[in-house]
Structure formats: structure tokens, C-alpha cells
Image (cartoon, each protein chain N blue to C red):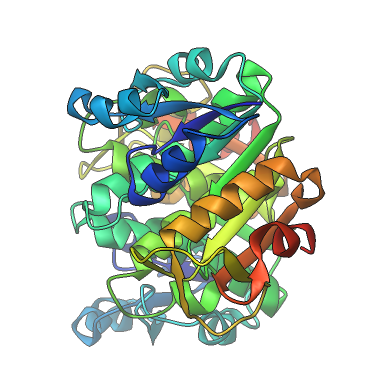
Length: 216
Length: 216
């Protein structure tokens, strides 16, 4: 299976690349913005494409998605300014969906945020802009595309080593999860088509990733 | 007919209020943010409600929409910062739609921007954030609600006196239109249910407003 990873140089993306290095059946095409980010992927034998999601056209993005079996969207504007939430998290995500459809790639896996509902969007804090951007991107994926989508809602991301064990479902209290375990969940999502049309929260837990993902 | 005007103190909103002062069949409820804005509406015999769209809950907004026959959404973040585009133009608009549905108000008239398509969203300029916000609000109205919607796409707004004559349609070259004529168009839209489910550009032109609006 070939997967285009959008946001490959993010912290989750780098954990995913570390898994890809030795993965027997999944090949990654890493979409990155900066040539300086390339060495990390070269070292792991992972193909890279250089594109700025906030500037690329849908056509150019479709050309990069062509021939892939899946797209993972994990680009994130975390802390990079409200302008990037418009052009990356919201409209960049929708461009990625349009590109996938144009390229005939059916499978689309979205890395969302923990909660994206009305209650979170109404909170009078600085996180709400990000939440609003992610909400409308997720909604577009679910209702305006014919893609085989899965939406993953991770808890509070940490850089600690993962345990390979998680908790999945919806309506959980927020808790931490390591980025390494999120990356493992993304791999498992690609491996299990039973996750198509589903969205779920993922937190540190006590169920093996593969088993947990199959249960959603 | 009773209409809740959201963004009533905007420049288009004030032109609308000037028409409402003497209108025989339409009564406005003006939603404004600041008590200092109230005198303008008091002088014209127009009821006001004080609410901040970026902070109000859907329930509180629905309470204000209750008993109305229509909602006009003309709140705009023009120049007020990217945060307000998230919470007013995009999510504020969707909250207004949710509130209208909750209150059983079917008719919803959106004042959009001239063009909101992919080409405009991809332009590498500072306007694109506003365009992206308006695009996703318009799309929500068209595809995610059961409202009787009309979307008006005005050209470059001016403060000159209107002529009462406009050009409507889609795919026009951008040109100017006075805010007074946009306000007249909004009145005509309320008066003609043939505009339900339609969107159209409006520019200065040579067809009387009422006739032009009936032709869309």
C-alpha cells in the first residue's frame, strides 16, 4: 500500500516515518515544505515531495496523490498563526480531499483534534480558532466527499515513548497519548478497512493498538 | 413580516434600517453589539437586541430569532482581524443558521462576498482568509441546512447614494455597487420568494431593483 502523508515532518509524522522505515507492506510518500527536512526521510528510505500546502493548487496536489492508495492528513498549524489555520487546517485539508478525489485515491485518514463540537467552538479561549478550523474540515470530509474516511481524535499529545496500548471510543475524558502511539494507530487504521466511515478518540490505555483499532 | 438583521450596525445594515423606517410591511429587529449603537435605531423606531455574535450561544440567538419570519446575516469582520473571521463570518454565520432552524425561522438571507470559489481562496493575498471564511459559511447554508436560503454576492461596496438600479446574475466582472442599493436588494429578496434557493451577484446596473431581483 502506498500512502501520501501530508504534514510528514510534524511530530506525529516523524513518528510515522520511523515506523515506515521497517514496515513490510506500507510505503510512504512524505509531503514536506522545506528541503532541510528532507534528510530525515532520506535516512529512512522514504520518498519525499516538496510542497507548501498553503500555496499548492488542487491540481498539483492531485498529481502528488496520483498512484497512492491512501492519504493521511496530519498537517497542523499548531501555534503558527491564525492565517495558517485558514490555509492549512481548514482549506488545506479540503484541498487535500479534493486532490484525493481528483487522483482517484479513495482512502483518507484525518488526524483531527480531541473535540470539535459546538461546546468547544464556543469556548472563549485562543484554542477555539483551531477547533473551528478542524471542525469544518472534518465536517467537509464526512458530508461533502465520497472518500473512504476515518477521523482520529487524539488526546493531549506527548513526546514520550509509546506503550503500544491505547483506549479508543468517543465521549472520553481528555487525557494524554504519545505521538508514537498515535502514529501506530494511523498504521492500524490503514490496515483495517473496518475503520472506514468511523471517527474515534484515542488516548493512552491498556488495549493493544491493533486490537483497539479493530474494535471501533 | 418580521426580520432579524444580524450585523445591523454595519454600513449595509444602517442603509437597511433607513429603508425600514418607512417600510409598510417589514419590521426589523436589529441585532447590535454595542449600546452606543442603539440611538441610531431608536431614532428610526427600530427594535434592537444587544448581543455579541462571537460570544452568544446558539440557544440565546435562537431566543432572539423566535417569532421572526426571516433572518438576514450581514455581520462582517472586515478589517477586524482573523480571529473575528473564525467567530463571526464563519462560525457566527453557522450559529445564526442553527439558531434560525432551532427557532423555526425558515427564511435566511446571507450577505456574502463577490466571489468565494477555489480560485479566490487560492489567491496569495490577505483577502483570502475572509474569502475562505465566507466560502465555508455559504456552503454550510446551501448543503447542511433546511433553510429557505438566498445568498447575495455584492461587488465592491461604496457609500455613494444608490440609483435603485442594479445588475444581477453570476459570472460578472467585479464592479461597484452602493451599499444603499444592496440594502434595497435585501428588501426585494425578502419580498420575493422566487429567490429562495438562489445565489446571485449584484452590481450597479440599469434594471430596477425589484425587477432585477425577480429575474434571478
